[in-house]
Length: 116
Image (cartoon, rainbow, N blue to C red; front, side, top):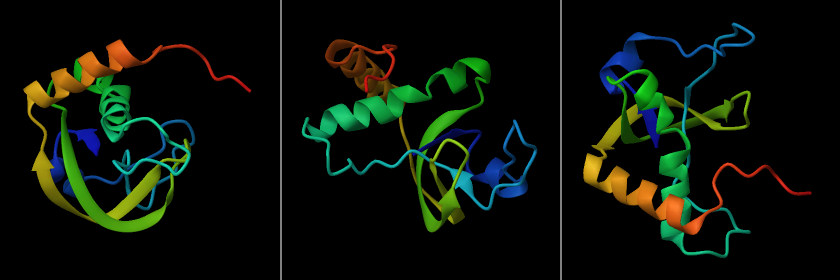
């Protein structure tokens, strides 16, 4: 999953790490597959993944959430997967995103820091 101005815009640009200025070898994504340690419902994982970066749309209303597939090209500076040769699969509609946000708010203590 990715929040951006879409596959057309992403195809015209190179991803760059904002802090270092280095070019990334692929697009930063949030994986929809839950990790092995995740014992809660898959719907909770998806709600969290979709809600984590929704603020990017507030910063730029042209951004939207979409699903893509591609080749694993490494990990970004926040250990997020990077995909090269991206192929758009779907655009996520607002109703789905709102459901995810509602579930995230209802099921999680969002904003609390990590515990050791």
